[in-house]
Image (cartoon, rainbow, N blue to C red; front, side):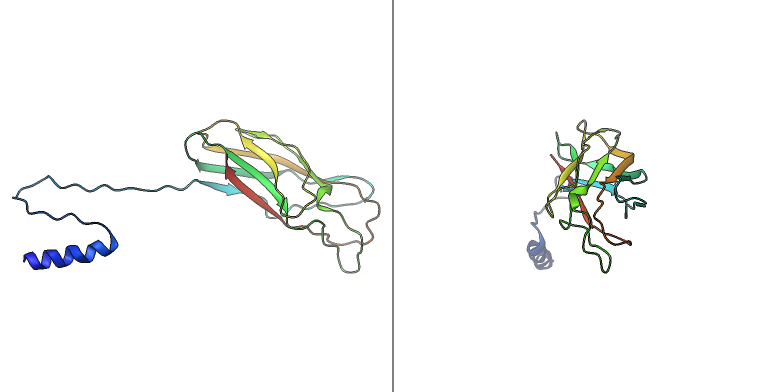
Length: 176
């Protein structure tokens, strides 16, 4: 019987440490520590698409209000959540036949946040360069969000083609 216990324990050593001892029964001297390593995390929501109906390229156009949120936020002690956005390219992609379109920094935004301080700003002119949208206002806050993030597309009278001009962007959620 002792040989079986040694073989089982030796097999467990491969996966984790093992403590073996001879004890008299009943016995409550053995203990095990369980550890859950929790990663920083949040349940986030961002708009899948933002659209503008541009009826006059010579005038700035505002989007409908967008919702961005983070809930069930779990961060390291003393940390806050930051939300940023970056263009995936320096320019929009014009529709077929178009030669003039908007640069990524033609997009700006304004908003009001709950549990966060907004950073009303302009999209970066450089691809993959993040610009802060909002910072959590206090540590240990379980959620932050806005339901009125409005993106504005600047006027550009030289746009030469009707149709969908597109720009993909990436959101970044991080602790600081």
